[in-house]
Length: 204
Image (cartoon, rainbow, N blue to C red; front, side):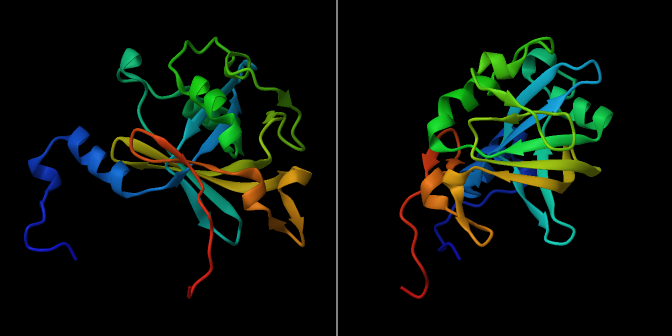
């Protein structure tokens, strides 16, 4: 527990943005879900989300949380959420350190008519079941079917049951194990990003 000289904050006494800064600077490192979706009209979308984790082992389910639309579109929801609601399916691609710039490019606000695969200079490749493409350059992709969307305050938690996992040979160690050192995951901090450092077992 922090000592008696610790700074103490109460959500009701500070602003939303201030509380957000405290959370994202403390809940680190966070993995990044690079989510590919398709609109009902067939327009591709690709966007990163760092509120991302495993929600259940059985059935295998992943969780991403999607915030509100960009300031440029105040009061709107993000294209990713709209597309998931409409098609009930999405792909979560992992982000290695080598794709940091491409991922960042896809995070920028653009009109719905812009294809972020093209903007980020990554390659869409056919998935196994859904018709939504993977990012070819990503070493691991999870094809997910929408389980449910839970509204939590201003945000939306999206739960997706895994329908298929596609793992590149470079990231696979055999016996269903992932070679984490080989694919070098990128993590989100507060305003910055970080690679994975050296791993170790406990007790040291």
